[in-house]
Image (cartoon, rainbow over all chains, first blue to last red; front, top):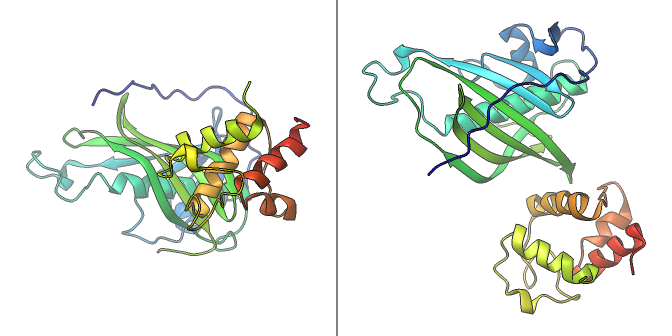
Length: 174
Length: 87
């Protein structure tokens, strides 16, 4: 199915306030410094952490990235250990990092977020590894203990997944 | 220009992909559960997004009036009228 290409280029915007311990400033980005911080920010532990890093783009948007090495697809023919549905979990974990960073709370204090529902999800063909997936989630609204996120995953300018993610607060799926 | 309730029904029917025929939706139709539109809490979030986008009306889950508005189509239309000052 043809899809309009959307080039992701962070625009210079007013950044969020720095959050000690979680975020470092890099250019106009506020970036999560190390994966050890991700461990603090989401309930998942390795090997269930599906993003390498995450950063805030603006007050409503976060981005993350994940490098998929060649060894995850030894024959470069099929994605053996990496399934497209994993992209959804990557987007959800990026959103959870955003929520934790924006709340600026210590590990565990935020309350965990759980993927409650998905809508309008589309997957597109993945190239053969190695590649780096960029994950972009935009927070739309909170209501009734749930939050709506518009997410997309892309490799370069090639979109590989889009969808609406509904996260609920207060429980964990880790 | 269609009135608030008509616009609301059209918006919900289109954006939430309701299975209930649009002609059967009235002011008395419950938003949640059966009989009614059969919507759930995720749909409530979508309704909040739609109201914000199309009517510039914010639903606040801490506000009893907001929660009460999500009872029937009519109560939600009344809530929008109150917030926007529309007739």
